[in-house]
Length: 127
Image 1 (cartoon, rainbow, N blue to C red):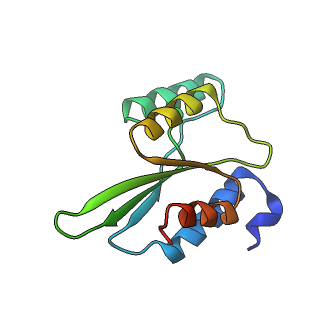
Image 2: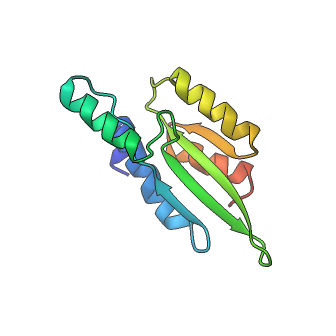
Image 3: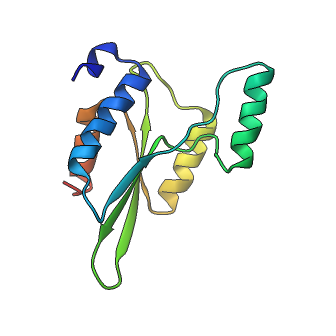
């Protein structure tokens, strides 16, 4: 895919989204979560306040996959993907939230490529 050469977080995220569109089929669902604003200045502060009011949580992973298995009653497992560029690091808020999600029994992966997403999905036996 053309995105991989750029290696920006946005490009990696787009490549992962393309992959998930191919492999995630109903009743499973996935979505990208709106991320909080990391800019500065008055406009950025106002946008951050509006996002927080709408429920956007700082540190929440970028992609959420709802894995449905079983029929009656259906069982669900939530898989989270935090997308980072090659040199990207987790913030303290991300680390703390990821720990909480793991402690609650969810799967959380920090990924930097489509290959890492494939490996994660294989590790949990989604694919």
